[in-house]
Length: 341
Image (cartoon, rainbow, N blue to C red; front, top):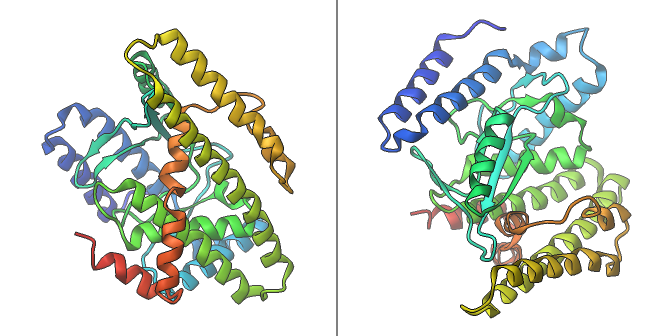
Protein backbone atom coordinates (compact mmCIF):
# COMPACT_ATOMS: atom_id res chain seq x y z
CA UNK A 1 0.00 0.00 0.00
CA UNK A 2 1.32 3.45 -0.89
CA UNK A 3 2.24 5.71 2.01
CA UNK A 4 -0.55 7.99 3.25
CA UNK A 5 0.11 11.67 2.61
CA UNK A 6 -0.52 14.26 5.29
CA UNK A 7 -3.12 15.99 3.16
CA UNK A 8 -5.08 12.81 2.56
CA UNK A 9 -4.89 11.90 6.24
CA UNK A 10 -6.30 15.29 7.22
CA UNK A 11 -9.11 14.89 4.71
CA UNK A 12 -9.89 11.45 6.11
CA UNK A 13 -9.97 12.69 9.71
CA UNK A 14 -12.09 15.69 8.79
CA UNK A 15 -14.61 13.50 7.00
CA UNK A 16 -14.92 11.09 9.93
CA UNK A 17 -15.26 13.91 12.47
CA UNK A 18 -17.94 15.59 10.37
CA UNK A 19 -19.97 12.38 10.39
CA UNK A 20 -19.50 11.89 14.13
CA UNK A 21 -20.85 15.36 14.85
CA UNK A 22 -23.67 15.04 12.34
CA UNK A 23 -27.14 14.61 13.76
CA UNK A 24 -27.66 11.21 12.07
CA UNK A 25 -25.44 9.33 14.48
CA UNK A 26 -26.83 6.00 13.31
CA UNK A 27 -24.80 6.48 10.11
CA UNK A 28 -21.50 6.70 11.99
CA UNK A 29 -20.44 3.13 11.18
CA UNK A 30 -21.42 3.53 7.54
CA UNK A 31 -19.58 6.84 7.28
CA UNK A 32 -16.37 5.46 8.71
CA UNK A 33 -16.57 2.47 6.37
CA UNK A 34 -17.06 4.71 3.35
CA UNK A 35 -14.26 7.02 4.41
CA UNK A 36 -11.94 4.04 4.81
CA UNK A 37 -12.95 2.59 1.41
CA UNK A 38 -12.43 5.92 -0.33
CA UNK A 39 -9.17 6.54 1.49
CA UNK A 40 -7.87 3.07 0.64
CA UNK A 41 -8.39 3.71 -3.06
CA UNK A 42 -6.90 7.21 -2.93
CA UNK A 43 -3.83 6.03 -1.07
CA UNK A 44 -3.09 3.37 -3.69
CA UNK A 45 -3.86 5.46 -6.77
CA UNK A 46 -0.80 6.36 -8.86
CA UNK A 47 -0.25 9.64 -10.73
CA UNK A 48 -1.06 9.08 -14.39
CA UNK A 49 2.31 10.52 -15.41
CA UNK A 50 3.99 7.78 -13.41
CA UNK A 51 1.74 5.12 -14.93
CA UNK A 52 2.43 6.33 -18.47
CA UNK A 53 6.18 6.04 -17.85
CA UNK A 54 5.92 2.56 -16.31
CA UNK A 55 7.19 -0.07 -18.80
CA UNK A 56 5.23 -2.81 -17.01
CA UNK A 57 1.87 -1.16 -17.77
CA UNK A 58 0.20 -2.39 -20.96
CA UNK A 59 0.20 -0.05 -23.96
CA UNK A 60 -3.58 -0.51 -24.26
CA UNK A 61 -4.03 0.87 -20.72
CA UNK A 62 -1.80 3.85 -21.48
CA UNK A 63 -3.81 4.66 -24.61
CA UNK A 64 -7.02 4.62 -22.60
CA UNK A 65 -5.50 6.92 -19.97
CA UNK A 66 -4.44 9.34 -22.70
CA UNK A 67 -8.01 9.20 -24.00
CA UNK A 68 -9.36 10.12 -20.57
CA UNK A 69 -6.96 13.07 -20.42
CA UNK A 70 -8.20 14.28 -23.81
CA UNK A 71 -11.78 14.00 -22.61
CA UNK A 72 -11.07 16.00 -19.48
CA UNK A 73 -9.17 18.68 -21.40
CA UNK A 74 -12.00 19.03 -23.90
CA UNK A 75 -14.63 19.21 -21.16
CA UNK A 76 -12.79 22.08 -19.52
CA UNK A 77 -12.49 23.86 -22.87
CA UNK A 78 -16.25 23.86 -23.41
CA UNK A 79 -17.16 25.06 -19.92
CA UNK A 80 -16.88 22.25 -17.37
CA UNK A 81 -15.09 23.11 -14.14
CA UNK A 82 -11.34 22.39 -14.09
CA UNK A 83 -10.58 19.85 -11.36
CA UNK A 84 -7.79 17.56 -10.21
CA UNK A 85 -9.97 14.54 -11.00
CA UNK A 86 -8.72 11.72 -13.23
CA UNK A 87 -5.08 12.60 -12.73
CA UNK A 88 -4.44 9.38 -10.82
CA UNK A 89 -4.99 5.72 -11.71
CA UNK A 90 -6.21 2.89 -9.48
CA UNK A 91 -5.74 -0.76 -10.45
CA UNK A 92 -8.84 -2.70 -9.37
CA UNK A 93 -7.13 -5.98 -10.23
CA UNK A 94 -10.25 -7.15 -12.00
CA UNK A 95 -12.60 -6.62 -9.05
CA UNK A 96 -15.48 -4.15 -8.56
CA UNK A 97 -14.84 -1.62 -5.78
CA UNK A 98 -18.13 0.22 -5.33
CA UNK A 99 -21.81 -0.69 -5.44
CA UNK A 100 -24.97 1.43 -5.30
CA UNK A 101 -28.14 0.35 -3.52
CA UNK A 102 -31.51 1.87 -4.38
CA UNK A 103 -35.03 1.03 -3.22
CA UNK A 104 -38.60 1.94 -4.09
CA UNK A 105 -42.06 1.24 -2.70
CA UNK A 106 -43.58 -1.84 -4.38
CA UNK A 107 -46.83 -0.25 -5.61
CA UNK A 108 -45.87 3.39 -5.81
CA UNK A 109 -43.01 5.19 -7.51
CA UNK A 110 -41.56 6.70 -4.38
CA UNK A 111 -37.88 6.05 -3.75
CA UNK A 112 -36.40 5.34 -0.36
CA UNK A 113 -34.06 8.21 0.52
CA UNK A 114 -30.94 8.45 2.68
CA UNK A 115 -29.64 11.68 4.22
CA UNK A 116 -25.92 12.48 4.19
CA UNK A 117 -23.83 15.18 5.88
CA UNK A 118 -23.60 18.39 3.83
CA UNK A 119 -24.84 16.68 0.65
CA UNK A 120 -28.54 16.30 1.49
CA UNK A 121 -30.83 13.44 0.50
CA UNK A 122 -30.07 10.75 -2.08
CA UNK A 123 -32.17 7.96 -3.53
CA UNK A 124 -29.18 5.64 -3.61
CA UNK A 125 -26.45 4.66 -1.20
CA UNK A 126 -22.90 3.67 -2.09
CA UNK A 127 -20.95 0.83 -0.53
CA UNK A 128 -17.33 -0.24 -0.83
CA UNK A 129 -18.35 -3.52 0.83
CA UNK A 130 -20.82 -5.63 -1.18
CA UNK A 131 -21.84 -7.69 1.85
CA UNK A 132 -22.87 -4.56 3.72
CA UNK A 133 -24.89 -3.47 0.70
CA UNK A 134 -26.66 -6.82 0.61
CA UNK A 135 -27.33 -6.69 4.34
CA UNK A 136 -29.02 -3.32 4.04
CA UNK A 137 -30.86 -4.54 0.96
CA UNK A 138 -32.27 -7.45 2.97
CA UNK A 139 -33.49 -5.02 5.63
CA UNK A 140 -35.28 -2.92 3.01
CA UNK A 141 -36.77 -6.00 1.37
CA UNK A 142 -38.10 -7.16 4.73
CA UNK A 143 -39.92 -3.84 4.91
CA UNK A 144 -41.53 -4.48 1.52
CA UNK A 145 -39.31 -2.38 -0.76
CA UNK A 146 -38.26 -3.27 -4.27
CA UNK A 147 -34.45 -3.02 -4.36
CA UNK A 148 -31.58 -2.93 -6.79
CA UNK A 149 -27.80 -3.24 -6.37
CA UNK A 150 -25.47 -2.39 -9.22
CA UNK A 151 -21.71 -2.02 -9.48
CA UNK A 152 -20.26 1.42 -10.21
CA UNK A 153 -17.24 2.03 -12.44
CA UNK A 154 -16.89 5.79 -11.91
CA UNK A 155 -18.23 8.38 -9.50
CA UNK A 156 -17.87 11.99 -8.44
CA UNK A 157 -17.01 13.08 -4.91
CA UNK A 158 -17.93 16.68 -5.83
CA UNK A 159 -14.47 18.03 -5.11
CA UNK A 160 -13.99 16.30 -1.75
CA UNK A 161 -11.30 14.04 -3.22
CA UNK A 162 -9.25 13.63 -6.39
CA UNK A 163 -11.39 11.07 -8.17
CA UNK A 164 -9.12 8.46 -9.82
CA UNK A 165 -9.35 6.64 -13.12
CA UNK A 166 -10.41 3.08 -12.31
CA UNK A 167 -8.79 0.28 -14.30
CA UNK A 168 -12.09 -1.54 -14.86
CA UNK A 169 -13.56 1.61 -16.35
CA UNK A 170 -10.94 1.54 -19.10
CA UNK A 171 -12.31 -1.74 -20.48
CA UNK A 172 -15.22 0.18 -21.98
CA UNK A 173 -15.38 1.54 -25.56
CA UNK A 174 -13.84 4.99 -26.03
CA UNK A 175 -17.17 6.74 -26.61
CA UNK A 176 -18.65 5.23 -23.45
CA UNK A 177 -15.59 6.32 -21.47
CA UNK A 178 -15.97 9.85 -22.81
CA UNK A 179 -19.67 9.98 -21.97
CA UNK A 180 -19.03 8.84 -18.41
CA UNK A 181 -16.16 11.30 -17.88
CA UNK A 182 -18.32 14.19 -19.07
CA UNK A 183 -21.19 12.96 -16.89
CA UNK A 184 -19.03 12.95 -13.76
CA UNK A 185 -17.35 16.26 -14.58
CA UNK A 186 -20.81 17.81 -14.88
CA UNK A 187 -21.48 16.74 -11.29
CA UNK A 188 -18.26 18.46 -10.25
CA UNK A 189 -19.32 21.59 -12.15
CA UNK A 190 -22.88 21.93 -10.87
CA UNK A 191 -24.51 20.14 -7.96
CA UNK A 192 -27.85 21.16 -6.44
CA UNK A 193 -28.48 19.88 -2.93
CA UNK A 194 -31.56 17.66 -2.46
CA UNK A 195 -32.18 17.60 -6.23
CA UNK A 196 -30.89 14.18 -7.22
CA UNK A 197 -33.15 13.70 -10.24
CA UNK A 198 -32.13 17.06 -11.69
CA UNK A 199 -28.42 16.44 -11.01
CA UNK A 200 -28.45 13.02 -12.67
CA UNK A 201 -30.65 14.07 -15.59
CA UNK A 202 -28.42 17.07 -16.28
CA UNK A 203 -25.23 15.00 -16.05
CA UNK A 204 -26.67 12.30 -18.34
CA UNK A 205 -27.75 14.89 -20.89
CA UNK A 206 -24.42 16.72 -20.79
CA UNK A 207 -22.52 13.45 -21.03
CA UNK A 208 -24.21 12.53 -24.28
CA UNK A 209 -24.20 16.00 -25.86
CA UNK A 210 -20.54 16.68 -25.10
CA UNK A 211 -19.52 13.22 -26.31
CA UNK A 212 -21.15 13.89 -29.69
CA UNK A 213 -19.29 17.15 -30.09
CA UNK A 214 -16.05 15.68 -28.79
CA UNK A 215 -16.11 12.80 -31.27
CA UNK A 216 -16.66 15.24 -34.11
CA UNK A 217 -13.71 17.32 -32.90
CA UNK A 218 -11.52 14.21 -32.80
CA UNK A 219 -12.63 12.34 -35.90
CA UNK A 220 -15.11 14.44 -37.91
CA UNK A 221 -18.86 14.06 -38.38
CA UNK A 222 -18.48 11.50 -41.17
CA UNK A 223 -16.12 9.27 -39.19
CA UNK A 224 -16.84 5.69 -38.24
CA UNK A 225 -16.41 6.57 -34.54
CA UNK A 226 -19.01 9.33 -34.63
CA UNK A 227 -21.50 7.43 -36.79
CA UNK A 228 -21.17 4.33 -34.60
CA UNK A 229 -21.84 6.34 -31.45
CA UNK A 230 -24.89 8.03 -32.97
CA UNK A 231 -26.13 4.68 -34.24
CA UNK A 232 -25.76 3.13 -30.78
CA UNK A 233 -27.48 6.13 -29.24
CA UNK A 234 -30.59 5.42 -31.32
CA UNK A 235 -30.84 2.02 -29.68
CA UNK A 236 -30.15 3.26 -26.16
CA UNK A 237 -32.64 6.08 -26.50
CA UNK A 238 -35.28 3.70 -27.85
CA UNK A 239 -34.68 1.41 -24.87
CA UNK A 240 -34.80 4.10 -22.18
CA UNK A 241 -37.94 5.67 -23.68
CA UNK A 242 -39.57 2.24 -23.63
CA UNK A 243 -38.67 1.80 -19.97
CA UNK A 244 -40.01 5.24 -19.08
CA UNK A 245 -43.27 4.48 -20.91
CA UNK A 246 -43.43 1.23 -18.97
CA UNK A 247 -43.03 3.16 -15.73
CA UNK A 248 -45.95 5.42 -16.69
CA UNK A 249 -48.08 2.37 -17.49
CA UNK A 250 -47.29 0.83 -14.12
CA UNK A 251 -47.98 4.14 -12.40
CA UNK A 252 -51.46 4.20 -13.96
CA UNK A 253 -52.03 0.61 -12.85
CA UNK A 254 -51.09 1.42 -9.26
CA UNK A 255 -53.35 4.48 -9.25
CA UNK A 256 -56.31 2.41 -10.45
CA UNK A 257 -56.39 0.25 -7.33
CA UNK A 258 -58.85 1.00 -4.57
CA UNK A 259 -58.78 0.29 -0.87
CA UNK A 260 -60.41 -3.08 -1.46
CA UNK A 261 -57.70 -4.33 -3.84
CA UNK A 262 -55.97 -7.26 -2.21
CA UNK A 263 -52.21 -7.72 -1.89
CA UNK A 264 -52.40 -10.83 -4.05
CA UNK A 265 -54.23 -8.96 -6.81
CA UNK A 266 -51.69 -6.15 -6.70
CA UNK A 267 -48.75 -8.50 -6.89
CA UNK A 268 -50.17 -10.58 -9.75
CA UNK A 269 -51.26 -7.51 -11.76
CA UNK A 270 -47.89 -5.87 -11.31
CA UNK A 271 -45.94 -8.94 -12.44
CA UNK A 272 -48.24 -9.42 -15.41
CA UNK A 273 -47.75 -5.80 -16.50
CA UNK A 274 -43.98 -5.95 -16.11
CA UNK A 275 -43.88 -9.14 -18.19
CA UNK A 276 -45.80 -7.34 -20.92
CA UNK A 277 -43.35 -4.44 -20.82
CA UNK A 278 -40.40 -6.84 -21.08
CA UNK A 279 -42.00 -8.91 -23.87
CA UNK A 280 -42.86 -5.82 -25.93
CA UNK A 281 -39.16 -5.10 -26.42
CA UNK A 282 -39.49 -7.57 -29.31
CA UNK A 283 -41.67 -5.04 -31.12
CA UNK A 284 -38.90 -2.41 -31.24
CA UNK A 285 -36.47 -2.10 -34.15
CA UNK A 286 -33.18 -2.44 -32.31
CA UNK A 287 -30.00 -2.75 -34.32
CA UNK A 288 -28.28 -4.26 -31.31
CA UNK A 289 -30.38 -7.33 -30.59
CA UNK A 290 -28.99 -7.72 -27.05
CA UNK A 291 -31.56 -5.17 -25.90
CA UNK A 292 -34.27 -7.75 -26.54
CA UNK A 293 -32.63 -10.10 -24.04
CA UNK A 294 -32.12 -7.66 -21.17
CA UNK A 295 -34.87 -9.24 -19.07
CA UNK A 296 -34.46 -12.87 -20.11
CA UNK A 297 -32.92 -13.83 -16.77
CA UNK A 298 -34.89 -11.58 -14.41
CA UNK A 299 -37.67 -9.02 -14.60
CA UNK A 300 -37.22 -5.38 -13.58
CA UNK A 301 -38.89 -3.96 -10.48
CA UNK A 302 -39.89 -0.50 -9.32
CA UNK A 303 -36.33 0.32 -8.25
CA UNK A 304 -35.15 -0.43 -11.80
CA UNK A 305 -37.78 1.80 -13.39
CA UNK A 306 -37.02 4.60 -10.94
CA UNK A 307 -33.36 4.41 -11.92
CA UNK A 308 -34.25 5.32 -15.50
CA UNK A 309 -36.55 8.05 -14.26
CA UNK A 310 -33.69 9.44 -12.15
CA UNK A 311 -31.31 9.67 -15.10
CA UNK A 312 -33.43 10.26 -18.21
CA UNK A 313 -36.96 11.54 -17.42
CA UNK A 314 -36.07 15.20 -18.09
CA UNK A 315 -34.24 14.60 -21.35
CA UNK A 316 -36.71 16.34 -23.66
CA UNK A 317 -37.01 19.42 -21.43
CA UNK A 318 -33.23 19.72 -21.27
CA UNK A 319 -32.97 19.36 -25.04
CA UNK A 320 -35.43 22.23 -25.52
CA UNK A 321 -33.58 24.44 -23.07
CA UNK A 322 -30.24 23.60 -24.68
CA UNK A 323 -31.65 24.73 -28.02
CA UNK A 324 -32.80 28.01 -26.45
CA UNK A 325 -29.19 28.51 -25.26
CA UNK A 326 -28.01 28.13 -28.88
CA UNK A 327 -26.47 24.80 -27.92
CA UNK A 328 -23.80 26.71 -25.99
CA UNK A 329 -22.60 24.70 -22.99
CA UNK A 330 -21.39 27.77 -21.09
CA UNK A 331 -24.77 29.50 -21.40
CA UNK A 332 -26.55 26.26 -20.57
CA UNK A 333 -24.60 25.73 -17.35
CA UNK A 334 -24.88 29.42 -16.45
CA UNK A 335 -28.66 29.18 -16.75
CA UNK A 336 -28.82 26.57 -13.99
CA UNK A 337 -26.06 28.13 -11.91
CA UNK A 338 -28.04 31.37 -11.73
CA UNK A 339 -31.03 29.47 -10.36
CA UNK A 340 -29.09 27.05 -8.15
CA UNK A 341 -30.51 28.31 -4.86
